[in-house]
Length: 74
Length: 263
Image (cartoon, rainbow over the protein chains, first blue to last red):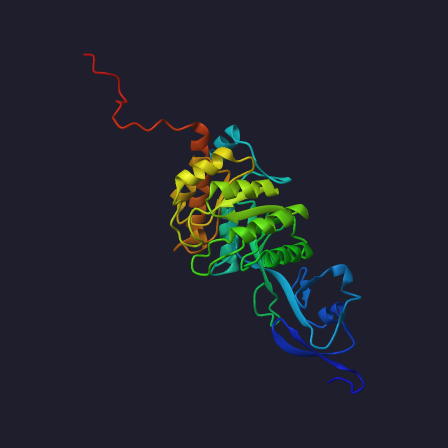
């Protein structure tokens, strides 16, 4: 599926190994995912990546990305 | 409803940080059999503030979206830090809530033990201090220890929320005397959080003088959650009204309700 010249970036997304064509930023990654309506918060290697930085924040080989939203809770 | 009107006539709204709430019941959104049922129960409870948790997005798209079932113009969201065991975890979760645009209030909950789900108060105090310093309106879940509740208040919490009993236990208010002592010294709202099993537990908390009650399982886990949501609403109002009305003192001997027989 990916053109041969594009680098493939492997990362851990919500606990699962996934690969995406690079180069990758948080914003580009989010654009490729079937996300629910509403905002999604992002952790890169366990640290909060503020929305204002998503466009510039690179995602590189081996990064651990967690996408967080609201669920029912008490 | 007549009960609402009677309460409104003698009561003030509950002030939490910058918000005023007319309902003193805060309810959770977890453990419901369906989100439709949750929505009905939230309405029936009369709550204006509801708790939510933060978890990984389901990228399979199979999980219904909580937000599709919550009218954000109607409810103030109270994200919790459930599942956190350290100050660092709790602070990070609060920061994530802020990223989601729901970070005005945070229900701080730092668990110290898996079996009892009792809070780790050392970590809770440290997290409360940091989050209050960062401008969060912290509602802190804690043990029913009057000294620790005072310490939490001094960190700048918007409300202190001692447990009635362990989370989800349904054991009610196990130590009424502790709750009374906490209330006597409090300068911020005191809400009982956790342990409520049925409506009378809510009424007891409110009669003691608590400013509100937070519960989830007692409604969501009831055989008929919708009926229990109504019951909780009425119990909260009844207990609050009884507290404001001022109960008669307890006596060891009888006092006749009718005048002495005079014929």
